[in-house]
Amino acid sequence: MAKKTVGTLVNINNLTMWSRNESEETATYGEAVSFMKRFMTVSDTPTTVSDQLFGDGEVAADYNAVTGGTLELGLTDLSNTDRVLIYGESVKDGTNVITTDTNSGYNVVAYSGKQQNGLLTLVKYLRVKFAPGQEQAQQVTNSGVNWATKTVSGTYSADPETGIFRYIRDNVDPVKDSEVVTKWFSDATYYGKAGE
Image 1 (spheres, helix red, strand yellow):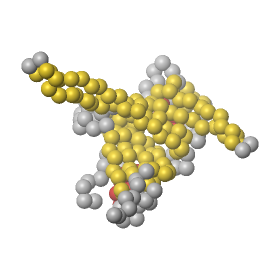
Image 2 (cartoon, helix red, strand yellow; image 1 turned 180 degrees about the horizontal axis):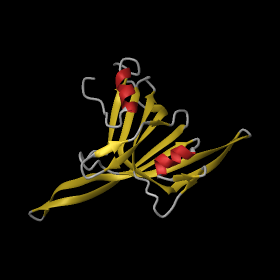
Image 3 (spheres, one colour; image 1 turned 90 degrees about the vertical axis):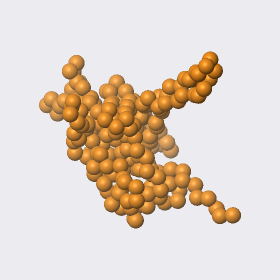
Image 4 (cartoon, rainbow, N blue to C red; image 1 turned 60 degrees about the vertical axis):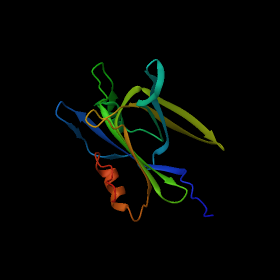
C-alpha cells in the first residue's frame, strides 16, 4: 500500500492585504501590502447557523450554513502605515489617530501555508473588517529573551456580488505553479482558475 502524504501546514507566511472600497456599482482595491517576515499565527472561527427543515410534520432535512466568521492574525509588529490600512486610522504629525469618524473599511487578506510535503496551501478572504478595539498585545519571554506580539482580529463576511467568503487552493507547487503564487499575492481578485 502506498504511503499517504499528509498535507498538514507546518509554516504560514506571505501575509498580504489590500484595501477594499465598495460602492453601489462595484468594489475597487488598493495596492498590495506585504507583511513579509512578520506573520506568525492565524485562526479562523466560522460563524454558522443550523436548523431543521420540516415537511408534513417531520424533519425532512438539516440546514447548516456559514454566515461569516472571525479571522485572527498574529504579527510581530504593526507600523503606522499598517494601522492606516487595517483600521482606517489617520496620521497627524506622525501619530496615528482614531476619531469618532474613523471607519476601518474592508480588506482582502491572503496568505500561504507550507505543507509537510513541500506544497503550498493558498488562502484568500475577500471581505474582512478589522476594528482597533480588537487588537491585543502579548509580552513573551522564552529562555531569557523577551519579545512582543500583536493579534489583530477581524470579522469576515461574504462578497455581496458573489456570496463567496474565501478561496482555498491546496497542493500548489511553488516551482511549477509559480505564476499562480505570484498572481495570488499581487491581484486582490485572483483566485486561480482550474487547470492553471
